[in-house]
Length: 115
Length: 117
Image (cartoon, rainbow over all chains, first blue to last red; front, side, top):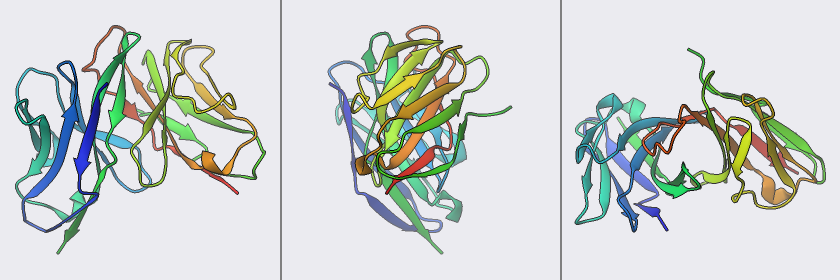
C-alpha cells in the first residue's frame, strides 16, 4: 500500500522567508509523487510532480521539491515566500490499481504568510 | 481553454434527500475521477471512469452513492438518502490518460460543497 504523511498541519512564515513543507511517503514500489495547491473555494492545482526522470523537480510559482529515496521524502521548498502563497498544500502519491493511477493524498498543510 | 467545471458549487440538502452533482471534464479527456474531501482532510478517491466505463468504484462509501458517465464526457455523482456524514466537498478531476500513465496530470474542478442538515 502507498501513502504519504505530511508533517505539520500549519506552517507559518514571514514574507520573504524560506518555505519548507514536509512530505514523507511509504511505497513498496517506486512511487510517483505530486504536490498540489488549493486556494480557498478552488480546486487543486498541480505544482509539480516526480516521475523518476530527475530527483530535483521544479514547479510553478518558484516551488521545487527533491525526491530523496534514502529518506523516503519529497519536501516542497520555495526560497522566498510571497503573500500569494498562502494556501493549502497537498502531497500525493499514485497507487497502481486496475491500470490507472488514483491519487492518495496526505492530510494537507496550511501555509500562512505574514507581512 | 476551459478547465473542469462542476455544478452546483454549493448544495444544501435535508437529511434523506437525493442529490446529483455534475462534472464537465476537459474536452477530450478520457479519464475522470471523483474524490471526496471532508473538512480539514485531503481528498479521498471515490471512483474512476475511462470513457463511459466505470473501472473502479472501490472508494464509494456505501450503496447510496452512484456515479455514471453514459457518453464518456459529462459525469454525475448521485447520492441517495443523504446523511450528515455525506457533508463534504466533492471534487472531480480529469486526465488525458489512455494508457497506464502514472505521470499523467489530473486537472481538478472547483468542487461542489455539499452540506446535509
